[in-house]
Length: 215
Image (tube, rainbow, N blue to C red; front, top):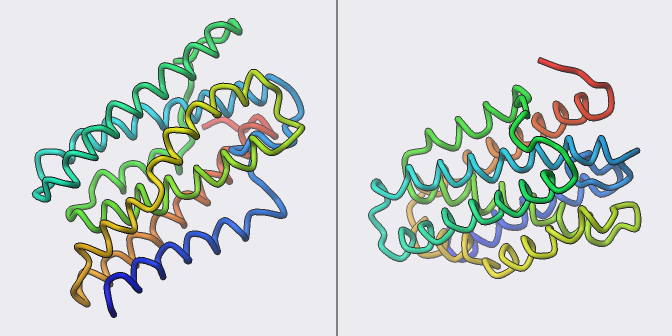
């Protein structure tokens, strides 16, 4: 398939997944959570994601041969830790310990799977395209909801400004580098892996937030 058409197809796949969440948003979105205790739980989980994302992208720098991708990836590492600082400061200001979070199982599996991806196109497909694509959708839904209080919305307006600036960058990388049938097959598998594991993470997080399930 033409690589640009293929990249558009992968973006559309992520958009369809997001549309499927619209009628029942997970706790990850902050929408319709019962109280600030539940919101703090979600923020701690998402704070952990920011830190782990930065760690993983940092570990990829040495094995990313494409200099344009490497440069943007380096900027993204810094950005993830800036986001972590924003969220940790909010939690600390509210008297919560930002770092007492215990990960839910699928969250660990998802990020470990990302870390193990070996090629640039797989990494871009699973993480920035699918993973961050879903996260940005969730931020948008949270910011648009009257059920999300200002102490949660304020930091995410700042984070969204950064994420929105990335725009179509992951798709543009796929259009540039995912040329062969083999590469495109690997990208499809990476996108599906990312969406499956993210759904499992959302389900685990819901159990912890709504039912106080612990592992």
